[in-house]
Amino acid sequence: MKKLCLLIPFIMLSVGLQAQKTATGHILNKDSHAALEGVEVRVEGEKNLAISNKYGEFAIKVNKGRRHLLLSMDRYTPLRYTLKPGFQRGMIRIYLESDRSVNSNSKKRLENDSLFPTFKNAVSISIIEFFAVGIGLRYERFLTKKHAVGLHATYYFNGLSPSNYADPGGYQSRASYTGVKMQPFYRFYPMRQKAKGLFLEAKIPFGYFDFDKITYRYRTTTHLTQSISPEFWTWGFGFSVGLMARIPGSKHGLVNFSLGYQYFPLVDVPKSIPREVSMGSTINLTADTSWWYSVGPGSYFEVKLTFGGIF
Image (cartoon, rainbow, N blue to C red):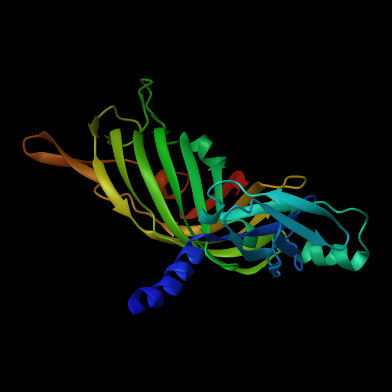
């Protein structure tokens, strides 16, 4: 009987803890999308109080049966927010609306708040790679205010070399290929503020390419040719500098521009191949593959321009 009496308080405490859940989230200005610091958060019908930090983050215990949060802050309209089922499994996002114009100091503080601490994911599509007959998609995950990792993936569905040989007989040939290029990257934002950020980027590209044909010729005035169809894996390294910024007038739209250097070689593709012509004598046929390093997937100087959104 004595043991049972000792167990009862522990059982009641355990039931009480299970009845409590924690609501966490970000509080943002509805117009500027900036994080709001100093917002008072209460659970309706309870006395416990939470205050949002400089990133607009808050955390508050919610007892079973309580479904509403009460938010208040000077110069903002009070809000009664309804918690949705499963609210404890992730960060919620709450917007407060200004009830009157704020002074210049408050506006400056809001403008200096960063967009990025309240959102952790960005996706975008590459524009320039369309001209290389490819589809480029980028995903970025913000780890902290100044650090991010991600992946830029490109599928070349009908890549063509700009090299176009023609002889007096009108014979022409271009190298054509398909391929996939993956670029895991790390970004450091030394000057990320407001809704934009300058970044330094390091990346390790790798990919697989399948050429329909690469044509080798003996001089440009001779019709002596030979073609090969290589398939290969390749990898390299690179680094870039750039700017990511919110599109003016948009809450979630982003534009991303970067310029950098990469080494991404055209491996297992010889610059010349021998060909026997007569009586055991051979000549070397050559192909122009310099386009790979100038405007192709292995361009030494790589320019990226993407548009997308952050969430």
